[in-house]
Amino acid sequence: MLLSNHSGFLLECGTDEAGRGCLAGPVTAAAVILPQDFENLILNDSKQLSEKKRAFLKPIIEKQSLCFGIAHVFQEEIDNINILNASILAMHLSINNLHEKPKFIIVDGNKFKPYKDIPFETIIKGDGKYLSIAAASILAKTNRDLYMEKIHEEFPMYNWKQNKGYPTKEHRAAIKKYGITKYHRKSFRLLPNQLKLHI
Image 1 (cartoon, rainbow, N blue to C red):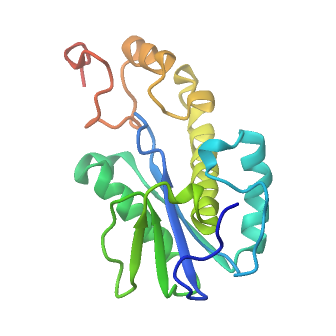
Image 2: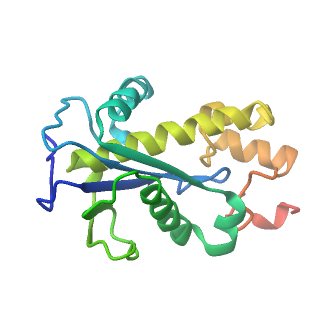
């Protein structure tokens, strides 16, 4: 059973990101403030749930949260500032998009930078411990997946609809065959032997 609150503050925000290990597309973050009496027996870390369960939970979180924010940081910025900084930036931007200012921020993982003057705590595997981080992980993942399905229509040969930009054998084979697109992260090792890739 996931816990509802870490800090004791009423307006506690959980934040998480999705797409950090992908070869293409944005890193996407979400921030969620849940009411303190929020309960859901299915809600868990998005990686532990099927696509169907994530899709089921998305509108529940959006409707029942006090507020939520979503933000994408795209591949050009990832290449510019590196994936760690881009992930933290996405989380900051998602918190910016909340219409209530949180009193405390709980972050999945062990890396974060101060956001304004709000106290925060990083929590390793926090998406499996706290409801608000789990909710943020669901919204980050589902919103990023929707974006990848949209750009799949432009470049169907990479099958982003299925692999969502992750480094599957199929995705890497398509990069080897067709080269890269404007959505690929040029700072990432796109093929096992980078020398064969002409950027």
